[in-house]
Length: 252
Image 1 (cartoon, helix red, strand yellow):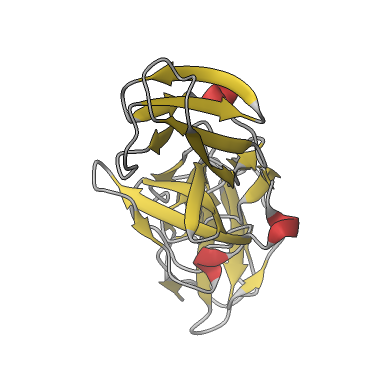
Image 2 (tube, rainbow, N blue to C red):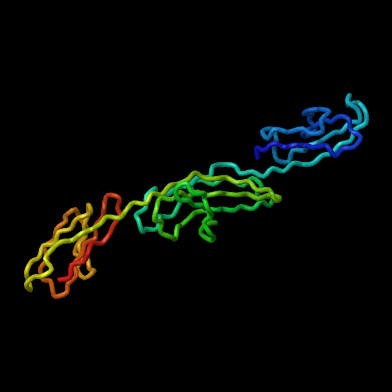
């Protein structure tokens, strides 16, 4: 849709001039054998007619050649959305389809294809393989380790002619995970209280033997008693971007 249509009559014989019509309405005449119809004036199922005359005055014998124009087109916006940040080592959240264009020739047999693409930096976009890369929405299944651009191409194919609509690009920036650290004595008398101090985040959740010792909070210290030989103490730190990481582990 929107492309120009060139009507070429160069294979006509014994013709001295030509007239061009759209839906039986005169458009132009010339001694030249071709005419370009602007895309803006064309619609699906228009009848395009070429009339070839045997003289330049166009008052003698003539012959007509006509065809019905079919136009493959997509109407509407191709828009996608997603969170713009992802923690390093995390799988990005699924994309959402804000809007998809309608396939105007769908009832006439046009086929619809979705193709997602990605790129890093200034590299060219490359197709994401099926099946996830050829669905209306994309649910990433792989970790991205550096900032990556994504986009969706929707293609309508009708009578071997393909028309495509490219979505807005979405850039997902990868945020480094925090580096958590826990400090405290790793030797204590039985029943003695031991204070552990965490750093590297904004919110902390302490664990003993992989069992949480309470809800996460901004408090970065904890006093523990009842520790036993080989108890394992660690902390999960969370930063302002909600990225998390576990600290080193202290073995009592």
